[in-house]
Length: 148
Image (cartoon, rainbow, N blue to C red; front, side):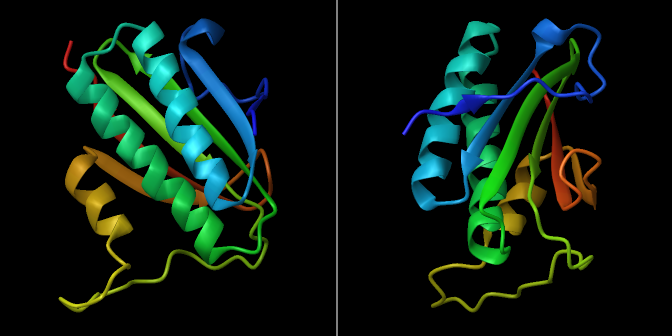
């Protein structure tokens, strides 16, 4: 499966369209793998440090996995953008029109899942969820320092 690169009317508030990259993917587990690979390649192309790329790819993976597992979406829109020299923004937009936010999950020690947003909270400088102007669903986003 190959990603579909999508131009966006909202370019992550970056100074240049060259500093934003979007993918539209099927909301399947295989789409998460494609998002990790494609976003990692784009971040390398931008010359970001490997540690930043690794954290950003993990954030993309966790946010996209939540979109796959916890929404009725058939497609996801994943975006990364360099907001300024010091900050990277990661967004995953779904098609969940129910208007609900993200549900809190307190996984037990033996649980095999349920830690995605805890990982996001630990890695991201800040993160949140808004109504997506692009899909009408949710936009879950995270900000990560670029290390520059």
